[in-house]
Image (tube, rainbow, N blue to C red; front, side):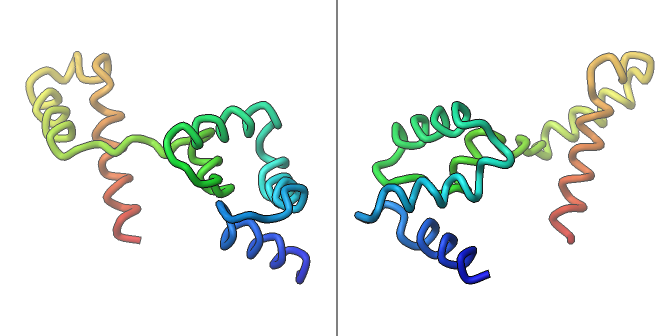
Length: 112
């Protein structure tokens, strides 16, 4: 447990500061290697450093590889509802059902 916490503190609290690079790499491997390949991690790091000047955290790297789903806006939701009311037969072809479901799931997640 203490080794785990040492990795967390070193990687999360000291990112971007001068430190032992080997220890930093070990920390990244510890948190990311079970879920992502090394080429995925390297590509994500490159994308991160193009956007900001600090060393990315494992969380930031994971978000580049697996970005969160885009939020459905209220206007997109209302458009889908109106389309459903107008033409129920074409409703499924336009993906409006998925938009409505995603919006409701999004709202449910906010309430949890």
